[in-house]
Length: 328
Image (cartoon, rainbow, N blue to C red; front, side, top):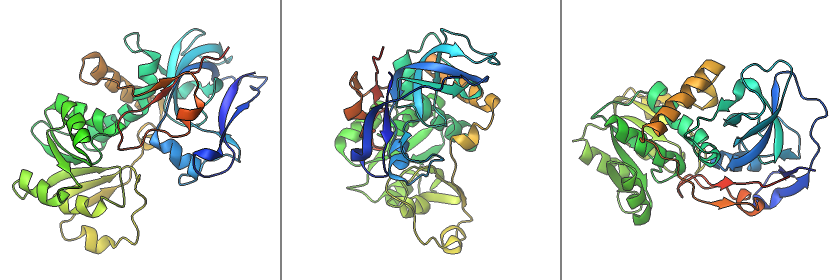
């Protein structure tokens, strides 16, 4: 019988349990059945586990949004895939922390031959996040200077590489010298250690008091004020995460009016609304990888999934981990 990791109640990693489960007896017409070979761990998993981001399931539920594997069965109306195909996904429905699952065809991505299953499961969610942030929400430009918080995190390291490939000068924030070296190594042009320097002052120094046209902030409460101060007139504040918590009691007029700022709270799901958007997004990422601009960084591997699945990589501690199931 296959195994899965489930959330038994909302809370910290102690609420996770490793359990047997039964697959549905009938595969839906437009679904495929996937045997997972690699499962990505992401910070958003902790939001689902703790209840910060509600999920449309009753407890207990299986966690996880990102995985790769091989198709072992297809529904009667599946037209884009066949048994034996290597596929991956990084969008809902959640439930990736398992050995085998059914998944809708329309949300699946074919894995190119030059990318391994491990790489696909470690880069897809974070890489597609950077793709929509840098290519479609606000298209970064050569010689432009931008600010990106948590530059040594999983998303931040891909962002550093992507910006370098474009010729965009990325200012990245970090909390230690080790993380500063890591971000610099991956292409971040300027590094600010927010433990030692005031971010907005340093940004203004780098930009000759102009500020940056866009700030990418996945941290939230702890960085919000400095993000706003770092923006130029008519700048764009992109709040795509809240690892430090939600911003509280925001005065919209006082915050955004003085410099006529723009604000958006986007999500990957909002930029992959249909199959065309999903495929274009993943193809842009895969092309960057094929050209050598983006390299998947796998921080950890294990065949005994449970201990690592309990604590997905934080937004600031580097790369996505990968869990390898070796089930029957």
